[in-house]
Amino acid sequence: MGANEANESVFDVYRDRVDRPLVRLFRSYGRPEIAWFGLGMAANVVARVASLLPPLVLGVAIDAVFVASDPFTLPVVPDAWLPTTQSSQFQLSAALIFGAFLTTAVFTWIYGIAANVFAHRVMHAVRTDSFERMQRLDMPFFDDKQTGEVMSVLNNDASNLEVFLDDALQNSARLGVMVLGIAALLFYLNAQLAVVTLIAVPAMVLFTLWFMRVVEPIYVAQRASVGDLNTRLENSLGGIQLVKTATTEDYETERVRRASYEYFEQTMQVIKLNYVYRPGMELLAGVSFAATYVVGGVWLFSDAPGPFTGELTVGTFVTFLLMTQRFVTPLAEVSNIIDQYENAKASSERVFGLMDIPVRISDAPGAVELTDPEGRVEYDHVDFAYPENALKAAQQEISGERVLHDIDFVAEPGDTVALVGPTGAGKSTLLKLLLRLYEVDRGEVRVDGHDVRELTLSSLRGAIGYVGQDAYLFDGTVSENIRYGDFDAGDERIEEAARAAEAHEFIRDLPEGYDTRIGERGVKLSGGQQQRLSIARTVLQDPEILILDEATSDVDTETERLIQESLDRLTKERTTFAIAHRLSTVKDADTILVIEDGRITERGTHEGLLDAGGTYATLWGVQAGEVETGSG
Ligand code: ADP
Image (cartoon, rainbow, N blue to C red):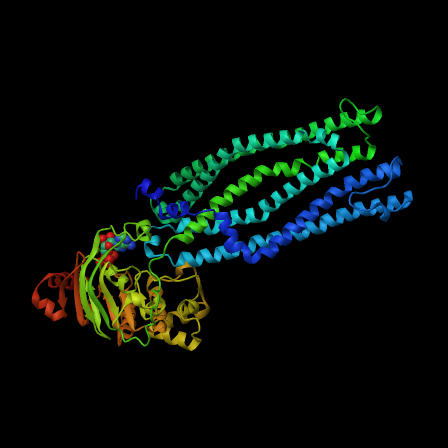
């Protein structure tokens, strides 16, 4: 696949179509958790407002208690409620300051919990939903090997959203409360001096805007290079066997080193800028402090300077000076907030883009259950082409080259149909249509007279057992692996199935028998053992229809004999389709279909086809010869 096609992946297309992703995130997933969100926001506001009280109370106490120049008054609170003696005023102010700190602490705690519960619950729902959606995507999606990208959606994008929902939202609320709260308070205390103190705020805002403009492209580059780095790592580790056998470790290390260095450079640039920004903000706050100090100081010891009028008290002066320090942190968060917002927007676009990829193969409206299947299978003039890629598949465009032409045959219940023919002829493809992993382009595949498209997927696939070359085993115990798909099966049934699959003996010899854990993908079992476990799984499933994609595998003759015996037992009484390499399957099959270039070119029984003297006879001659030389 060329780079251009990779750029136009099904992901990109559906991601670009996502409209207002964050709004959608809140609508679809935020709503059920709205109470937590509200609680978090409310607690956040209370905590921030309370944190403004101590400087205010201190100013009032200075004027009323220490300098004793003014009466004890507080905003909002009626004077009649306040104490009149200095000592009780002092006690009240001390209690208020302590109470404010306590309130800030308690409500910060509440807000922290609520905001996190909100963020993580939302993300839990998003993750579960997108996974469940992703599993149902059509096969072409997985053929395009885009699982790496899906992993990154489920991991990275989910954490980006978590950070945004938790941090960024709360920080922006805090920013609003602090800036508005402080401004309101200062204007209430002394509107004229407030103008002086707040004069630095527009400068801070401008400075922040400048910083964002400079840092944004670097953030974008940084995100891209971390993406490259991850892709690099994933590719190198994914192909570890090739890397080892080709001894390209140094080459891979160099590639990773280069990707990592690029990321390092971008990160350093961001860090360097951050180290200009933060002290710059502190400096501006310092300017505000100095201006307030000079103007307020002159005002205090001589008289209202220049254009200023009225009176300034020492307490108000102190409150003002303390407040200048409160701007820096919330404002300095602005650039983080914006960055997290951009990240979250991109991430939620990816999440919803994934969820929006249309699924073609799903239960049709009014789909019927396949009950008590007999196992009669008909292919009625079937044509099929693989979609060129996942994008075309999603858009239902059929543009690939035709792989199957006019496939037409019937398998009666209990029949064995052997498919023979060269590699790439279309044998596996033909059987994938029976499982409805792909949709036919023309004609019909029927099971017990029902078009597979009219059956529910679960009842159709439940009636079909598949034993493939690549016996996939999950990380778990032996019995868990046999039970997979029939989770209620008891231990006796598991053992019975294992016996039928000729697997019981070797399982018994494992360190912990049926409770032995097998590693991811069953790496600790031999190929033959893995295959027998997968046969046991199918025996337990007890399907009416069986698909055998026979291994040409490298197992020894004894294992081969065991597998053969278990398969013979399995295929009895079931409609069986075998992509056959073993001569015995072919010979005893009720029907042999020779597939060449996507067409059935010969059909019949072993004897019939030998007599006909076509391709089959030739193939048979070659294979029989091989077996003779092999055993002789
Ligand atoms: P066989 O089982 O006879 O070896 P297959 O059914 O696997 O043949 O393949 C038939 C043709 O379809 C081949 O040309 C192969 O390249 C193509 N093909 C197989 N699987 C896919 C797929 N998932 N996507 C696109 N083309 C495929």
